Image 1 (cartoon, rainbow, N blue to C red):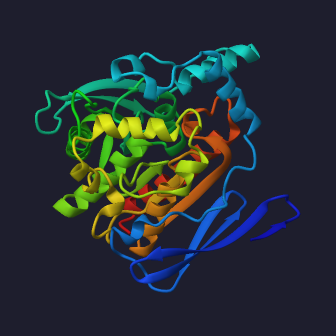
Image 2: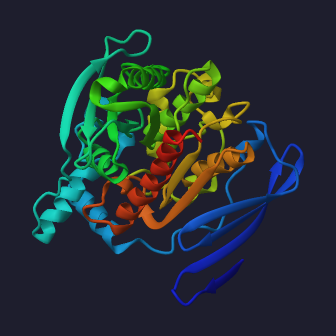
Length: 389
């Protein structure tokens, strides 16, 4: 591995590793420059789902926890949450979240709660997937400019089991203002009461509703993107995949923040961050047990989009990853697979931060930067769609 430092103090790391595939050894070069992760591959391009389950390059572990991230982690620890894997979903939904920890960290600083203002918030009940009695969505209109606005259909995290619109309110508000877009945040059905595929069914139905009804909330039906965090990143990726497969108007962009992409493969970050907080590897497995019904579900591209037989023709993507996160490597693997399929994909890895950092902008500067990066990809795609490119 080679490491250099430029005058601005930005570190660049380059690592080459041989990964096994059914076609022999695949050379992957991973280079980190100024926080941006760049991947390149030598040799045959792999296209099958099984080959794309290769582990991401090892050796890109954390260089230490960001001090601001540590503030949030300390505030979360002060709330004494029980490990997810030691409770059942009904109990887990009452445990403190990272959003609660941000409020605690602000209080420790003597600062009031930070809520980013938007112009308007509206709730609607929209059609859900098969067996649904309807899906609640929360519509955030940005604080500046006038419509019709581009639209981001956003799916919250929580492993398809816990969390809700309120827990991820900060992300929705920040994205609405940073992108100057309406954010439609979707309260999809959750497991174990509604296991797979209820969540992707609801996500896909909500996207269809947003495209068909955008004008009713001052949105532009020709500029609709999808996005989400963690389980929500999975739902965004799956929605983009289903729209393409089923021949409906595709999203103009997909924002994938530390997405779940593969329930089958094994990745170095599972062991490297086995006991990480707020998401550990046992907690990740806990979510899977409640969300999926059978081992066959793990192979279904609606759960594991990395295993889809063909990713060609999908919309451009922004993939944002946290270094201290069991999901880091499968998110990187999905970004690589998208690039191999010719999908324009921007991948950025943030050092020293954990899963759930994206919504901590009130405390963590890197979270603010991640919102800027996310907004840049969305705004570029919205602009290209508006100009007919």
